[in-house]
Image 1: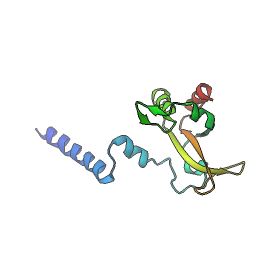
Image 2: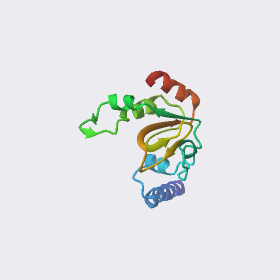
Image 3: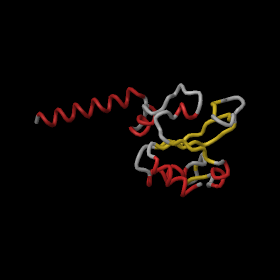
Length: 135
């Protein structure tokens, strides 16, 4: 009896954390509260500070993907996300950023930048398999 009460209290406490954060799922909660992301970073590499490999995806690969997924608008990264979900062993992130490049770094620039897709991998072998499959 006591174990059931403790389990129920633990579940209520965990659900309260999710509700207080304003997130609708634990997946969203972990994406928003990722300690490997530096939200104050000015460059792409400083933004993904906790990830081992950051790749900039060529725009022609993003455009070749279907624009619609099950009748809904797709941002062009659906196939990348599906592949990563099924094949990656570590954490990964797929994001659109508006950046400006000076040759060495990609800086975040909302006004003058161009759109680019970046994929960050925690595991280097995941990044190598992604590169062999997609690039």
